[in-house]
Amino acid sequence: TLKSGPTAARGALREGQRDWGWEGQRCADEEGFDAVTLDEAGTMVFFKGSLVWKGFTGAAEPIRDSWPEIQGPVDAALRIHYHDHPEGLHDNVLLFQGKRVWAYREGRLRLGYPRLIDQEFPGIPADLDAAVECHPKECPSETIVFFQGPRVFSYDLRTKAVKQRAWPAIYNCTAAVRWLERYYCFQGIRFLRFNPLRGDVPPRYPLDARDYFMHCPGRGKPLQAAGKYAAEPGTGAWPAREGSGRTVAPGAGQGVVLGLSPGP
Image (tube, rainbow, N blue to C red; front, side, top):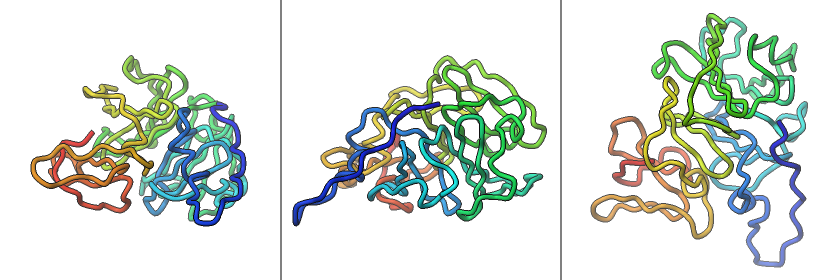
């Protein structure tokens, strides 16, 4: 599904001027992202148009630099983390576009790809909007949740069974991702947290992704905690794991402990 067009190249910068062009665009654009996923190394990557941002800070780069066989925009993306996958797709990154899916292992396209989506995932429609894998400790079995407009499908990787879900609180996800054992649906630049079994959404949502999933100038939610603990502006924070008082800052990168917070 076409959700955004290619981005214009950044212009020349005056001496001493910081480049908030390709880096800042993900902060300025109200449309949000075409797809979000973790790569094989666990880095969160954000796709939009012909560009991709790797990590919570930094400038964008063309998608073709990392995945040369596919041109943007990407409809949906996910990382398969399933040791017993019958076709060896464990720790592969899957990119969806139109009727086809590409599978990458360590940045290299796997033999036999791209494939038609309905060949790789029988019963799942083309032109997806988002996809996210649900791990067995949060779902009864290794499952992928697919989104297409208001429709939600769950696909069992072992049995290949497909179920269509009636989740009125979850609709029109433009991207989805699992992070720290929690599941997020992006709706443009805003996001919801949802239960991958029931589709429930906790109070307080939606929230603005620019306060939690990226570093944006002048933005960010300070930690609501007693005492001196506070997050860097533009980072946001939430617990490192369910039930933990320790928090990490998505905008700060790999598990930076900031203090105590209930988190989003």
